[in-house]
Amino acid sequence: MGRLTCALPARQSARVPGSAAVERAERARWRNWAGNERAEARVVHARSVEDVVAELSAAAASGGRVRPIGSSHSFSAIGRPEQTQLVLDGLTGITVTGDGLVTVGAGTPLYRLNAELCRAGWALTNLGDVDRQTVAGALATGTHGTGAAFGGLATQVRALELVTPAGEVLRCTPEEHPDVYAAARVGLGALGVVTAVTLQAEPAFALHAVEGPGRLDEALERFEELMTSTDHVEFYWFPHTDATLLKCHTRVGLDGGLDPLPRWKAVWDDEVLANAAFAGVVAAGRRVPALVPPLARFSARALGPRTWTDHSHRVFVSRRRVRFLEMEYAVPRGEAPAVLAELRRVHAAGDWRTAFPVEVRLAAADDVPLSTAGGRDTAYVAAHVPAGTDPGPWFCALESIAAAVGGRPHWGKLHGLDAGALRERYPRFDEFLAVRDRLDPTGVLANAHLDRVLGPAPGR
Ligand SMILES: Cc1cc2nc3c(=O)[nH]c(=O)nc-3n(C[C@H](O)[C@H](O)[C@H](O)COP(=O)(O)OP(=O)(O)OC[C@H]3O[C@@H](n4cnc5c(N)ncnc54)[C@H](O)[C@@H]3O)c2cc1C
Image (tube, rainbow, N blue to C red; front, side):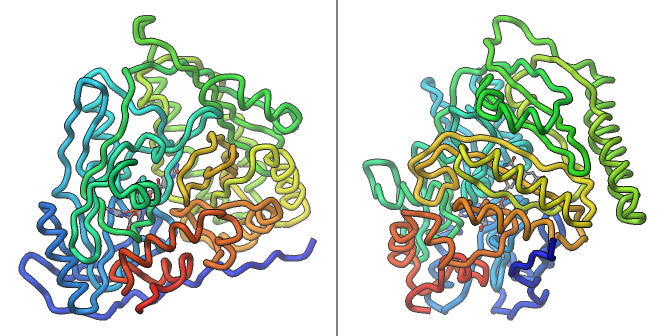
C-alpha cells in the first residue's frame, strides 16, 4: 500500500506582529495543551463584559485582530492569536435556578461547573472525556461525549450572551437573535466573544460503569447492537491487535447508592496504568519503534475488567497526563463499521507504529449548523499519536477514509480541510457564513486557521 498523503497545514511561525500595548496588557508566549501550536501575542485578561466590549471596539476601529482563548485544549490552530489574545478568566460566575437552568461565565472551566452543579443537586447530561476546558471554549469547537441518544454540549445550551466585533452585546435565545443563537452554539469563536452561557442541567444522576476488554471483530459485526446496548458506550481499539477496551455506562438514580472505585484501584488504573505506565509505553515506542506492536498488546491487556458506580461527572471524565495529538472524524453512524474495517486494513498494510488507541463514540443528530452531528446520527472515530511526533500517514489514512463517507472533522482537532471541502460536508455551512459575514465583516476575530476553514471575511 502506497504512502497516503494529505495537506495537514504546516505550523506557523512563532512570532506575530505587535500592536500598541494598553493598560493591563502584556506580550506573552502561548502554547496549546499538545504543544504543537505556539505564538507570542498581546494578552488581555477580561474581567467584565465591558472589558470585552472595549477590546473588540478598539480592534474593530484600528483594524486589529483579537482571538478569545479558553484552556488551550484544542489541537488545531483555531485559537491561535495573531495580535491580541483575550483571556476570559475573569468571567467565571455560576448561577443555578430551581429548574436546572445554569448560567455560567464563559471562562468557567467545566470541572468547576460540574462540582458546583453536583453540590446543588444537578448535572450536565453528557460530557467529553476531560473537564479542563472552559464552557465557551468547549462549545466553540463542538465538544461532545458519547451516547446514541445524546447530543454534544451545544444541545444543552438555552441562551448565550455574545459581544459582537462591533461591540454590541447580544442576548441570544431561540426567540432573540435566533440565527445568531443557532449558529453560535458551535461558533468556532468566529461570531463574537461569548461572555455567558445558559445550559439546561438535569437532576444529578450516577453512572454504573462496566468496563473491560473486548474484540474489534465483534465490535464491527455487532456495532449497532453494542453501541446502543446502554446509554453511554465507547470503545478504544489498540492498533497492532484485535483488542479493544469497552466502556458501557448506564444512567442510574442516586437513590440506589454509589459504589465508587476504591482509592487504591482508581489510582492504580487511572494514574499508574492509564497515565504513568502508558507514558512509559509511548516513550519506549518512540525510542524503539519495533517495540510498538508488543507494547500495544501489553496496553490492551493492562486495564482489566472493572465495575463501579459514581456521580456522572466522575465517570464521564478521565485524567489525560500523556500528551498527544488527535484527529477525530464524525461519520454517519451506519458507516462506522466500514470506516473502522478500512482503517484496520490500511494500518495492517502500512508500516507505521501506533501505540495510541483509536477511540470510537456516538452522538445523536442535532440541529446546530456547524455541529459535527448536525442533521445525522453520528459515530466519532479518533486517532492519536504522541505529542511531538509526525501524525502524517496515520492521520491522512483516517482523513481519506472518512472523506469517502462525508466525514466531518472535529473543529478543535487536527485536519487538513479548507472551506471548499467543508462546505460540501455541512449542508448549513453558508447559513453559518452569512451570520459570520454580517457580524464580523472585517475579520476582527479571524486568524489564519479560520481563514482556511471558513474563508476570509468579505471586507478583509
Ligand atoms: C486531553 C484532551 C481531551 C479532549 N477530549 C475531548 C472530548 O472528549 N470530546 C471532544 O469533543 N473534544 C475533546 N477535546 C477537545 C476540546 O474539548 C476542544 O478542543 C475544546 O474546544 C477545548 O476547550 P478550551 O476551553 O481549551 O478552548 P480553546 O482550545 O482555548 O479554544 C477553542 C476555541 O474556542 C474559542 N473560544 C474560547 N473562548 C471563547 C469565548 N469566550 N467566546 C468565543 N470563542 C471562544 C477560541 O477562540 C477557539 O477558537 C479534548 C482535548 C484534549 C487536549
